Image 1: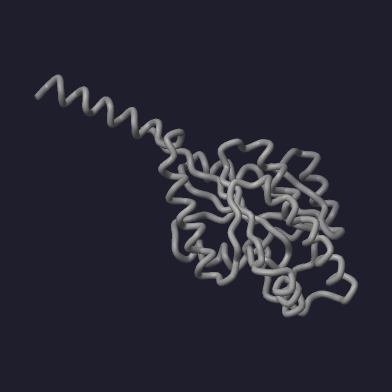
Image 2: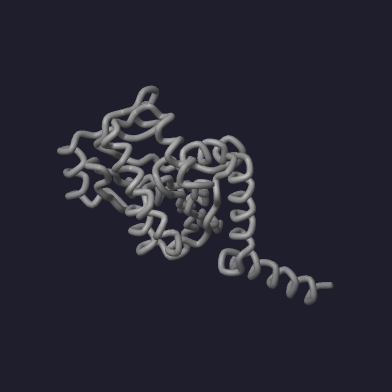
Length: 210
C-alpha cells in the first residue's frame, strides 16, 4: 500500500521571536510530530533530556558528526546544535508531518538538502518587543543579551530565504497563519500526485464498467 510521504515543516527565526511557544501550540492542536534536536548547551530550568533536546557533551556531539548522524549541525553562541537524521527520515517515510524548530543556520542547511520542505520564518512584531521577550527569560547576562540582540538584527536579513514569514504578534494569530500555510501546502499538485492518479484511474474504471 502506498504511504504518502510526510511534510517537513521547518520553523526558525531570531532568538526571542516565540518559535518554541508556537510549536507547542501547533503540536497540541494537530497530529504533528516534533523532531528533537541535539545540543551541547546547558539545560535551562524545566528542560528535560529527550523531550526538549538531547543534551550531549561536546565530545558526544562531535562523535555523532563523525558518524554522519545529523541532517545539519551548527555552532550558535558557542554551543553546538544538530538535527538527528534517522528519526526525522523514519517519521517522514511513515507519512507523518514533522516540525523542525531550529536556528537559521541549520534551517538553511536543511533547505539545501530538502527541496520540498516548508520553511517558515517567525518575526517579532518589533525589535523592541523582541528585546523585552529575551529580557523576560531571565537567563541572559547583559553581555549575552547584547550578543543575541545584535544577532537578531542580522538574522532577520535571511527572511527572504524562506517560503513564508509569520509575524508573532500573538501566539493565537501566528498559529492560525501557520495552519493556513499547511492547508495550502497539502493542496499543492506536486504533493497530490498519487491522489490525482488514483482519481483518474477511478474515473476511467467507472466509465468502462458503467
